[in-house]
Image (cartoon, rainbow, N blue to C red; front, side, top):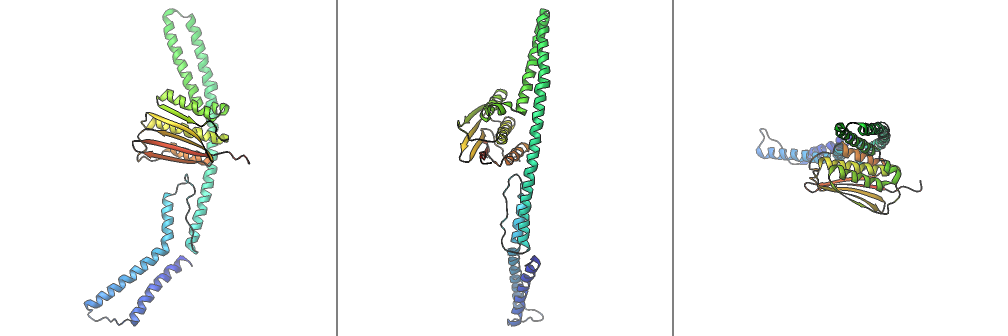
Length: 317
């Protein structure tokens, strides 16, 4: 039955009941109307309106649920669906809305995959140019400064040595940026070595007390899953260093029955009421890319914990 006919019949039932009551009830209206008759009419009108409101509320309740879901829907948290009950136009609307969510989530996943692949390719290109072009140029400058310093008068050597140290520091910074853009150790030595190098680098440059807890035996993960774990750990530590006002953090990588769980926990001030920024949403997009589950818990004054559960690689595929 269509929504129009449902509402029409609901009102028809209420009005028919009121008409029948007027036909058979021993109620009359005097002119001028007396107080008791006015009370009866007002009471009857109130009953009619109440019955009409209750029936309409029941009939339109699925649309209210749909409206509430539409206001809070987030494609980065997939799986939100409305239960489809009954028949008619409202059931068709709910079913169509759920199908639309499935299509949007699939399209969002495909576009995220293409965007993240392009982003990693661009990171790889920039890291290679930094290492090969800028790094080699700075190395050549460093060698030339050393050659000039060895032949320079004594009064100029101190200045040349200072220039050497500045150039060496710039070369180290370029190499560090290249490693952060594309961690070569991840491809060469694996995930645990890459996370160890990452935490050591953050400890050196930020002064944070970063503790590591890595299980010795981890299940097999795909290259994309390992890269997502590395990027989530990197972004989490970056947020700790920039926003958490923390003294330390812990990075843990544990084996789970279904795969691997990464957790990054700090002892900072927590997220409070701040909204998720681009960094956190980027982590959610990366998690969806490998069908992982990301959770962020925060307690004001006690810190924030980011957990990422990544399923193990499917060996049958």
